Length: 156
Image 1 (cartoon, rainbow, N blue to C red):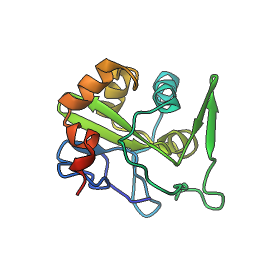
Image 2: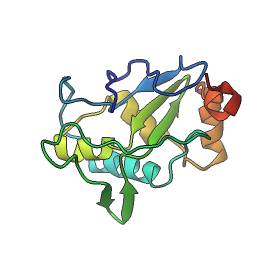
Image 3: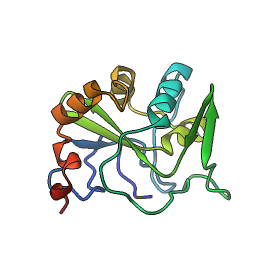
Image 4: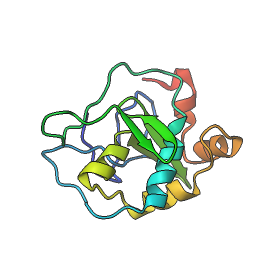
């Protein structure tokens, strides 16, 4: 997986305008990252959003393993409080005002197993995020600059 610093710009997606996109949780074993406790409520909310996340109308091939795990590359699913979430395959887009946070689904594993602590402003956005298949989410996505992610013609 490509490393990006937390809250920094992310150019991973082939869109003409990625100025509102901010990376969260794009970790690498060669780069330092914040650690500390993340509440069960915040972890569960991330799980809920990643059960059926919205994603752009194009598909990426490939599966991302955990670069922090010494031998296994981490699990392919997370089971938590009745949720089964496949990880390493999708990204979570969390709109907040004029910012669109983008986190890989591996964020669940890195929080749980490697004590990664996402930035508080991202966790606040996660708490406030509407369900990913709702009209409120789509409105927030557009307001946060996600229009280029919605249009197939926006790819460079």
